[in-house]
Amino acid sequence: MSKLVSQTIEELNLKFPPAPKPAGVYRPILVVGKFLYVSGQAPVNFDGSLMQGRVGDNLSLEEGKLAARQVGLTMLSTILTHFGDIDKVKRIVKVLGMVNCTADFQRQPLVMNGFSELMADVFGKEYGIGARSAVGMMLPDGIPVEVEAMFELY
Image 1 (cartoon, helix red, strand yellow):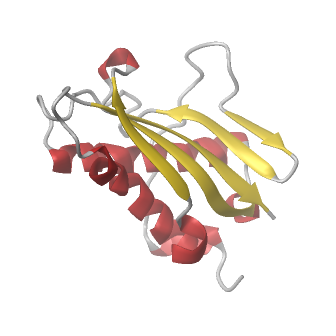
Image 2 (cartoon, rainbow, N blue to C red):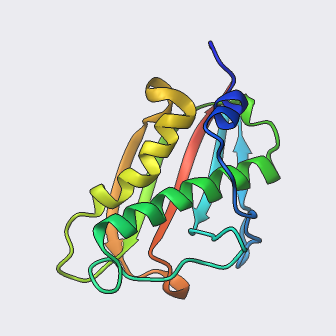
C-alpha cells in the first residue's frame, strides 16, 4: 500500500454530506470477518436532504451520473461515521447500483459510472473497481440512485 486512503481523500479535497440515519430496521454498516457491508445509500445533499428525480424523466443521464457520485460521497461518509478508520478499508468488492429511471431508459451502467469513478479515484484503479451490477427500478422517496456495496478490510 503506497498511500493511505485518508491522504487521497484530502488531496482530492472531497467534502462529505452527513451520514444518513437508518430509515428502517437495518444497520448502516456491518462487519463480518474481513468484509464491510454497506446498506443501500441514497444521494444525500450537503444540507442533509435527499436528492430527488428520475433519470429519463426530469433528470438527464449526466445528472443521474452526478447523483450516483453523490451516493459515493454519502457512502464514504457512512463508513467514516459508523466504522471510523477509512484506512482499514482495502478495496471495494461488489456494488449493486439501482437507478430510478423511466421504463425506456437503458443506460443504467453509465449512470453508475459516477459512483464507480469516484471509488476508483479514492481507492485507486486496482482497489477501487470491483464487480458491479446496475439495474433500473422504482426507488423510495423519489431518489434517483441507490447503491449498496461490500468492501474488503485489511
